[in-house]
Amino acid sequence: MATISAVSRRTSRNLRITFIIQSILGCLVFVILLAVRPVHLLKGSSLLVFLPPTDTGTTILKSSQIRGADNKNSLTFFDRAAQDSLNITLQHTPTEPRTTFRLASWTQKTTGGLTDQDRTLLGRIYSEADSVFEWGLGESTYIASHVGVRRYAGIDSDAEWVANARDKSLPHFRFYLADIGKTGIWGYPEKELAKASLDYQVAPMLSEELPFDVYMVDGRYRLACMLIAFLHASARGGDPTKTKVLFHDCTEQKKLYQYRKADSFLNLVEESGSKLCVYMRKADTTDQQLYDLWKKEYINTL
Image (cartoon, rainbow, N blue to C red; front, top):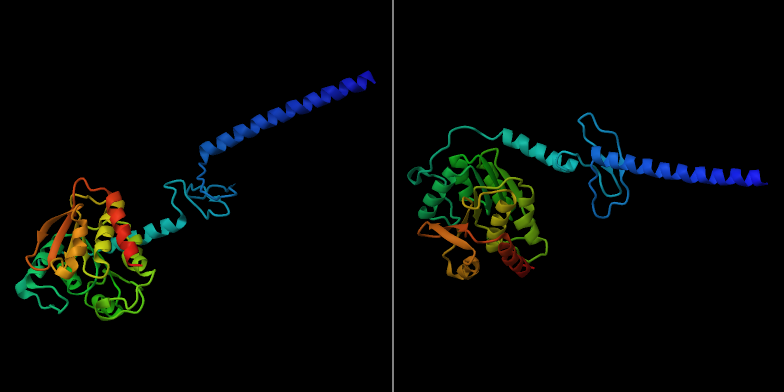
């Protein structure tokens, strides 16, 4: 009986030692895996499974909410597809010499509201800009096409205006149609819908991974769009000392009260002498201040 008891104690002790050794080895393996294959944890992820590296050296993680990530920039494959699409688009940007805008020879005047003074200032600024985004399409779009803006995108709430701008502009120009519900004259919505601000102000900017040199505001929700322009430029790495936002109808009394809300944060750096104004952010203006004002304007449209 004593022999059996001694054997039992030795067996129990050996099992404990084996368990301790296995636990230590398990911890070492986990530490090694973390070192060679970083794990990116997301809130709500419940299961992480290591898969072998791909032929490009990418380690893929799967979970109930993670579809895939690479270990280069922690980008999802959707992000990589978006980057590839952007690169392809940029590779086909025209490289022909730019055209100087001359009012005397300009033949595409419309009744959209630009005066000759506005056209002169706009033509000069667009001629000097490599990239332009517009809220509100029309004659300004034709001027951008005429001077050969390298990278252009614009949005409107009226399908006819989008079609006209597309048909009369350079083929590399990109256009968005904002669904803000049924619209009347000048693209004004007949009824304010909760989706309108998102579709018009923010949605197109989510697709624009690069900042623009110039943002033109000449459509709906103008103050809110101006603030979004500065926030977009900041988020995408734009130079705050160079980013310009153009405002049309900036001198109309019925709209002036709205624009003046941003006077504390922006500088009026140039104007046409008619209805076009050029704004830049003040040196001490923060994104938080712009966002807070935008949020008030956004809520006011709901």
